[in-house]
Image (cartoon, rainbow, N blue to C red):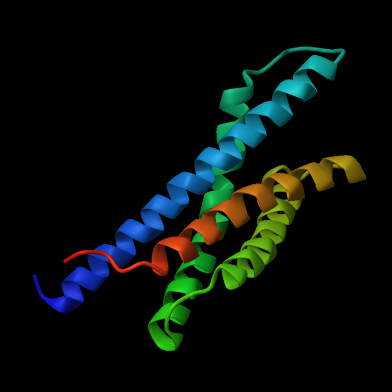
Length: 143
């Protein structure tokens, strides 16, 4: 395996693992959020929280991919990523993903609490995805 192919495989593994970890953290948070909303609702029908969480986690993961590729390009140009940079980019991308959820994916009239809930879910998934990506990128993989 050439050096270029090994780098491409390592980058693909890092993006995949960080996306998986972020989706897991975001899925757990979204499931709990929608379970509480189901419990507090006075009307029906009641949707399974895990299924509704998938409708949140997948669009957020797609919104976070360009940020992961930007972090990958930054690492290629500037060297190793830092955890502080992962937190900062995770915060920015999480807010962007949460606002995308609130105003594009679930485009209806929202209260401030709904928008803050979506931004919170985006922050959890964005920070966990990009901090994991920065952590994985700071280690050298065996060849």
